[in-house]
Length: 353
Image 1 (tube, rainbow, N blue to C red):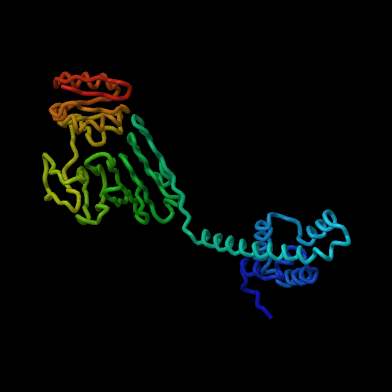
Image 2 (cartoon, rainbow, N blue to C red; image 1 turned 90 degrees about the vertical axis):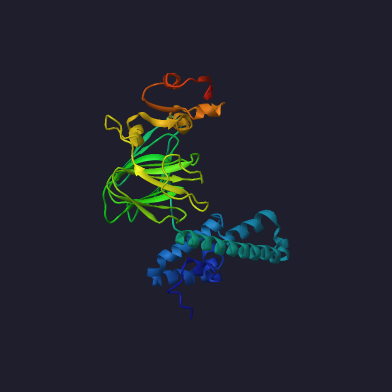
């Protein structure tokens, strides 16, 4: 006697008597399985699932027996039934073989999907000239700068708190010792408990950086080189994506195998404004920077594309503050410091000497 106490839906479906019970083609099979179900109520759920799969895979068709009888009555004269019955049963047998194959494939796929980790990503994104405030389920505040995206995986704040960032964002993280907060960027990963910090990691820029305002964070380059860096309040770490030596600070020898890393303090100006996070207060703070360095900031802030026609103009240095100004007003203000010309065509800005 077959022990069916540990059968799953797939095991029932490959049983030929169970198929005939589901199809309604054999009275003995129907009687047997009705008695079996009554005698084994603990397997009712599994059997119901098997019957449901059978119904789905057979296209919710009527019982094969009823279909055969109707086919005989509607299509063939009485005297021809004997001659064609064998042909019909061959077709039925072939259909059952195909059905069984479909059942096995479906069940195996269903089991695979059930065992596969289910991850659903939630993403917030901003366009050029746009900023957005996001409150995560743990209470953490995130402010997204222009042309940025933040993604969290469904289940955030259950066992872990992990987010992916492309672009720039300011984080004010709610403290939770049991669930460290992690920020993943294309260049480095950051681990925190409860703190506030700024991360800037645009793919189209030569550097990526993290600035710590409060608390403590550790970070490590994605490629694993350079070890773990611990930042204290007011410190900023900059990852140079190329091998060009920084003009001002050189703390690590240039290397072809990994980005150059520099650790400095954030820039604090006269009214206690932190240059690196001024954007969160809808301000652009330019502090002794090349025109070429602030090009990306202006492009994302004003949703424009800037092109230089003269390399000398790219090296002009500026210190300025912008908040509600238009791109024309900002460029006019910079013209008072250095002599250059500009032309605006749509969203394209051409700057020449």
